[in-house]
Image (cartoon, rainbow, N blue to C red):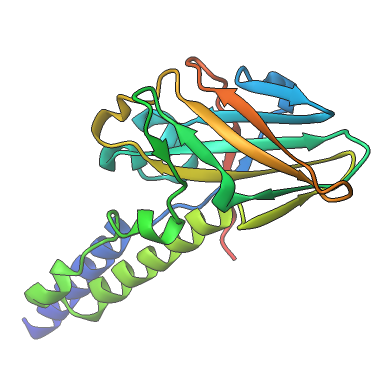
Amino acid sequence: MRIAAILGVIVIGAMLAGCASHEVKALSPEPIENYKNRVTENGVTIAAQPFSTKETAEAVFTIDLTAAGYCPILLVMNNESADSQLVMKADIELIDSAGNVRKPVPANVVVEKFKHNKMAYELGFGIFSYTSADDANKKMVGDLSNKELPAEKVLLQNRKTYGALYFDLGPGLKTLPNATLIVPIHNMKSGQTKQIKVRMAEDLPLPQVQQESEQ
């Protein structure tokens, strides 16, 4: 009986481990000309795609970020100007349809609302569930952080780059339609700064995603 009980705990632990997992997917943007939300100024092209539904958010980030009012926006940038350009994430703003100014929310802050709790551990299921939830939380933080646009990004000549921005728009993302993403571009040679404004639209193509192989 004791052996059966031990085996039962192991099975339950394995099931909990499966439930508290986070699937990491690679994000491979489409060619920049495929995006509907796209603006080109002075040789720099900025494209933006919001993941504003449960289906699109889960397809790229595994979890439905929109359930907590977060809207991930993929930023794809291409520099065909004569100079290198600098993009600073702290300067980027989203002006929603109600006129509110939204700043990107750090990935680690977003993840706090989606972390797996350790209730099973507290109920006595032991190290199996505790370790599983902890590992899943770490993978979630790493995943969203790796997809996030870095604090500073240099756009080299004839190069493309991309990264995700996370905006807190509240339940239902009601102020997303007709919102405008403002991306300041700093010319590293002249020192001049220009703002590229991209208006959000619906029915956008979904970037290709694939499951990363386990290391």
